[in-house]
Image (tube, rainbow, N blue to C red):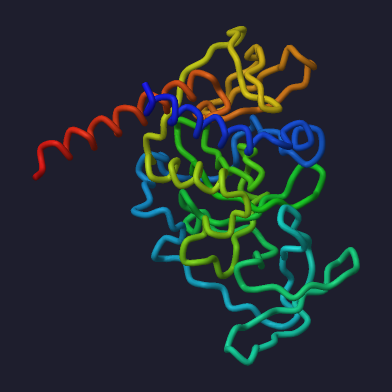
Amino acid sequence: DKTRDESRESKTQQANKITSQDKANSESHAVKPSTSSANINGGDSVSQKSSTTTSNPPNVPLEKITVNMKVVARRKALSWHAGKVTEIITKEDGRVKYKVAFEEKGRALVSGHHIALAHQPKVSYLSTGARVVIETEDGEFMPGIVAEVPGRKNHMRFMVFTDDHTPVYIALPKIRLVCQPLADPLDDIPDNNHREFMRDYLRQWPFPAQTHYRVGQKMRALYNGTQEKVEVLQVDCSLIEVIFEVDQHKEWLYRGSIRLEQMLEMYEEMGAKKSDEKKNNGTVKK
């Protein structure tokens, strides 16, 4: 079936691009999920459905950025650093930029959506789809999107997808809220394929597509453009830790990731079904 083949090819290409640097991510700045519950209170994640793919709930005030304010700011696409605002500059076109001096030397001129508060945010300020920065185990900062808020199903933890497609469960003290996010925070994600993945995820929330796995189960997952054999080592709510047979490296994957062969087939069927529905609707309407 041509539609089915095109759908599968599109998803495979998307997954291939997302995983072009998987090994580098898993060995360098990828964040390991925390299995300990965050010491916070929150409602069940299902009750936190976002009405759109934009993240800021109505009760979150935009933080005013001031001189000498301690912040975490973007230095490059996947690397944010702690620093202090030293100057506020208004451009001729009216745009406001902030000069940040980083603690580890160096300066940068950034926009408000590339600055995060240096302290942990209130739980009520974080909802599914919120633009955040998280502190990794090695003290680095990575930008991402909140994918789950604390609830019974995830042992009262936040889950964040960092911009390199790494899913992680993380405690509140390791999260920083972006001060002035874009109208649609997903527009700030540099990788097109991960951005579209997040759009689909938030569109399907609170019931994003997932499959169930058990420890010891063997299957296939995309790695370096090829579906490789993996074995499930751990299951942690929405995540699974797998080991790749080809080189024995381990990764945490989201149970709904299109890197998983079973999910790829599911998306293929969904795509074919939608295409058939459009064709049928087209034949009915004159």
